[in-house]
Length: 412
Image (cartoon, rainbow, N blue to C red; front, top):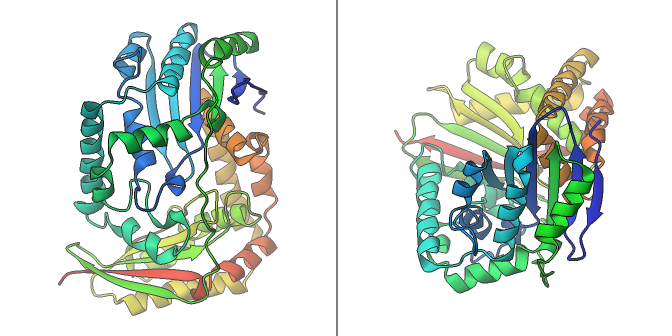
């Protein structure tokens, strides 16, 4: 059970406190309600760019990490389709340094051309290294626009293309910051060895005077139901052919989310999974074959991704996958198989909760979803999944009219 208390400052900042006196560490997690789905389709990659810019210095702090490290702290951040999340960990007696640093960059990030140019170059090099110069790196750039025709999930968090980052100027960056990086568009979680009273005092001291902003949340359309199979062939200089199938599934709060997550484990998680045993080990059609879900807030994707053994055709590989999916759609999963994956999931959740930082991040994200109590009920949602639930979910999802398929050919 993760205990917590919640309050809101006059400027709209939501603050959550979680007390743990068994540690001498405190975590400060600041979630901004902005991800790549909030970007202009012609100016993508801004949310991820800001993940870097926020460490470039603010009005009173020339180097964020230098000041933090002098207090014995560490920091990092990540961007998703839905949020941008910043976090620091510090010795509990130095946590006020974290309040000071994060409040200063929320109030007055240092905008200058030199910092922007440096961070743009960092992001551009990351784009090239991860998406263009790495074997299969552009898979995400191909499968997303194939699966999404309307929703802004049709580009990765780093952006559609390098040119969007190259074209970003100071005015555009400032506008993006002052719209989304506002106290009334953020969730602050303080977890660790700090009392609720000190949390209230420091939150008011450092964040209370930051003015509320007129945040405009960009509107976008939800993806309409896919009614026909979509397929695309890609040719590149890679060692093996790869098959990628993406099925639309529910979002983070939809009833089928937990069933889809468990189905991904049953099919493709580890060496006891069905795909590994039947298609990798027994039939030797794939050198590796994985399944995973995108985990998005809005309806996301259930992905099947595998590299073919040389000599195996796409027709053979895809037919074998379809045979497994058809079996899944026509037979109840046995209780022992379901119990095994639920136990594995429960173990992962409980071990994750050992970390005070993980608890802070979970509280922030649950609050973002609109139900902070999810940090304590998540396991119950998995435990409530039955073989019948999995069967019905599989029948509904694994239809080719709901699927986008990428045939990634290795150039001969």
